Length: 369
Image (tube, rainbow, N blue to C red):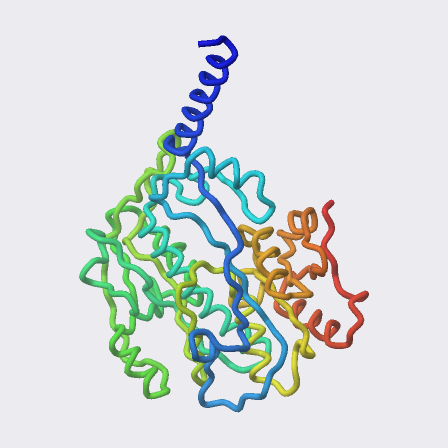
């Protein structure tokens, strides 16, 4: 065989071997890409995303789109070819697998966590929107979770309303842990509660829950979070406290197959738009992202650049951007998309007023610096 032919054949075989290796050998990476966007003022799967009953609503126009990021599953084995393609593509990001699924988290665990965060974000979005409109919302501290085999198991239950700990009234979830840790492990602590069933019946009847009970628990020592600095005497009872809200009318958010807390801001704005005369957007296509708490503070999210691409591809002209995401967003903004910096729900509402006037020069902008 002539040397030139043999060299070409060997090179071809090596190339084929490398391509096979690239396809067959998995690498520890995952892909993030733009996910679908949904207009919170519109419909999803044939029904309104925001459904309000018991209060007057008003017609809306334009878009207030929440944005999402699509990620590869925890069990998906990416190969070298896919990773290189993703690195070169503008509309995707390749990240270490542990970034999306830390500590060996399974896809099922991640989905459950995202679902819980999404549910909590809906509650906070409703609370923040109604507070912005000066509509009263009743809040109370409840048992959110009872840890298995803890001191509280069988004595406290999810949904129990916590009125006081050792006779001291509680007004927010963090009060509970502070009061419990005043005790030492092995000491008794007294919870004054309204049982979950009693509280649920009162809520259904539109009344404040009555008929409190006192439950005595024996505290235990908290497990050490840092072996180098063991926690010798921090007392716990094995619950997580949360907040439950009673709304003066029904507000439901109907959106399947979406998880995480990042749609909170856009849900709040959609609720406000439906409950007030006129259009917040003036018919403009506005998208955005951001977590939101009960007080209306907007927090940062992940995958901001993928959300920008998804929003622009859907037709958005303006993007409401959490303050802490502004620098990353400004460093790679799709052409034709105006970033609007927001820190609170009130900021976002004020910016929509400016957008509605058609003069974007007055909008708070993001900078890469």
